Image (cartoon, rainbow, N blue to C red):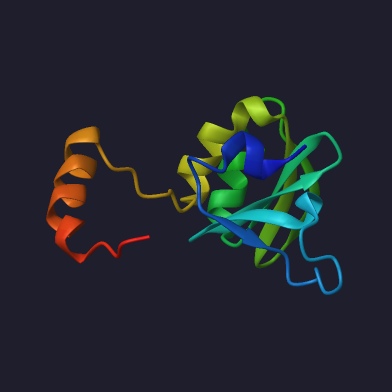
Length: 117
């Protein structure tokens, strides 16, 4: 599963710290949040949740399998249909979205600074 192709326009992406030597491997891409992050494990998604209270709420959802449970958080595996629910719970960082009107206003405002090609 490629997180960039599926969710790259919605959520902010990051890379796992262990990607040394494998710069553009989509298996090492993660979606960061303030309460944890989501990563790929084969054809399913997994989340590493930093808060025990949030981990308990996520583990109670149907289709969520707990991989490890610790004092400081929990790792869970879930189907990607549950990602919107998990994203709200883990507070995944979303990409900024511009409306077409805001895009036109920015283009008009910045037109005088545009460099000729």
